[in-house]
Length: 169
Image 1 (cartoon, rainbow, N blue to C red):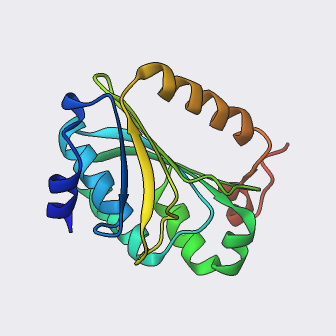
Image 2 (image 1 turned 135 degrees about the horizontal axis):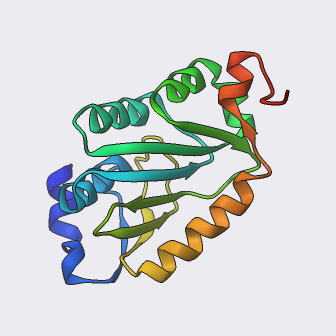
């Protein structure tokens, strides 16, 4: 399905903002397409729900060096329902924060790129039409990252929970 992304989405250098409305690829295919162009990058991912399939793709991208640092912001109810998956996700990300989150955003950044993806798709297999926007405007990336970071301060650090501590002395 990566070939479908290549057919439907323009290279990042050709369009600062583009939208898609399609059922022909999964979100991890779009992420891989973007990382092929940016090279190794930091990824901030927000989601309401994540599947084992998506996490396995993240592991592959991290092991291959496409993802250099991974921060995940997930909804706390999803984490409770899928504790085993949450533990797996926690082991591949540098940061796993849990809170009241329904946003589906990918923020991809390295020294040369700032890419924002806002999508309707959770990080699960979607066999439905999904819609999203891809943007390479640095100011949009910076605004979204600032908003995510503000909300992160209200969230629970899953590393502390799974380590049996609260992070407080």
